[in-house]
Length: 404
Image (cartoon, rainbow, N blue to C red):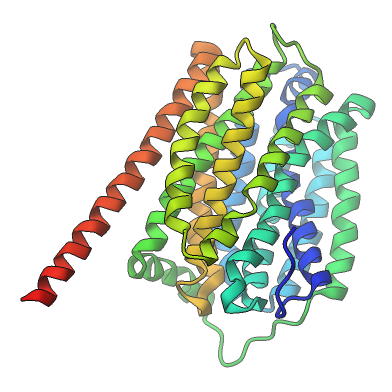
C-alpha cells in the first residue's frame, strides 16, 4: 500500500485500510458458498442469487439512511455503534434455522456493514489536499482486498468447518475491530449546530443537482459494479458444475486472482493526483467490455477465465478509485453525503447485477451471464462517450462566447 501523507500517519492509514477490508467482507462471504448454503436449506443453488441481491440492497439502505449522519455526528462513535450491530447480525446469520431467517439476517448485516463507507471519507478528510487521491487509493485498496479475499476466506473455512463457521469467525473479527477502532480513531466532534436528519437527507438531492460530475461518476460506478457483481455471482454457478466441478475452497481461491487485480489498480489514485483521471476512466470502461469476451471463452478455458477475472477486477477497481478521487474534491463539507449519493448508485447497480446473474444463468447458462455483462459494459462505454461529447460541446460554446 502507498505511503501515507503527513495528515494521516502510517499506522492510522493502515488501520483505516485494514478496518475497511475486514468490515466490508461481511457482505461477500456468501458468494462462493451459494451452492452449499442452498443444499443446507434444501433449495436449488441458482435460487440463492437473491441472497446476494438482498444483502446489497440492505447495504444500499444503510448508505442512504445512515451514512449522511457522518456529516452531522461524531464519525468515530457512529462507526463503533454500527460495528456492534454488525456483530449481532453476523451471529444471527450463523445460527439461522431457516432460509427466511438467513435472508433477513443477511439484509440486516448489509445495513450495518455501511460502517466501512464512513471510514473512507473520514480518511479523505484527514489527508492533505494534494495527496487525497493517493490516500483514497490506499484505503480503497484495503476495502477492495477485503471484498475479494472474503471469498477466498469463506471458501477455505467452509471447506474445513462448514459455512456457519465462516460467520462465527467473521463475528470475532468484527468484535476485535470494534474495540480497536473505539480506542484508536480520532475524535470527530462537529462545530456549530448540526443539520437535522431530515435536512441531511433532503440535501442529497441538492448536492446531486449541483454537481454534474457527481451524477456522472455515480452512473459510471453503478454500471461498473453491476458488471462486477454479475460476474462474481455467476462465477459460482459456473465453477460448481462441469467442466470445472470445483468445491468451495477452489471457488473461493478465485478471489486471490481478483486481489492481484486490486493491487494493480491501486495506482489509479496516484494518476488522478497527476491529472490523468480522464485517461484512467476511458481505459477502464473499454477494459471492462473486453474482459467479458475473455470470460465467455472462460466457460471452457481456465486460462481465459483467469485472464478475464484479472482484467475485469483491475478495471472496475481502478475506475472506482478514480471516481472517488473526483467526487471527494467536490464538496469538502459534505463528504459523507457525497459518499451516500455515489455509493447508493454503486450498490444498487451491484444488486441489479447479482439478480441479473441468476436470471441469465437460469435461462442461458454462462453465455447468458457474459452477454448480460457485455451489455452492461456497453452501456458504461456509451455513458462515458456521451459525457465526453457533452463536455466537448460545453468547451466549444465557452470558447465561442469568449471570442465574441
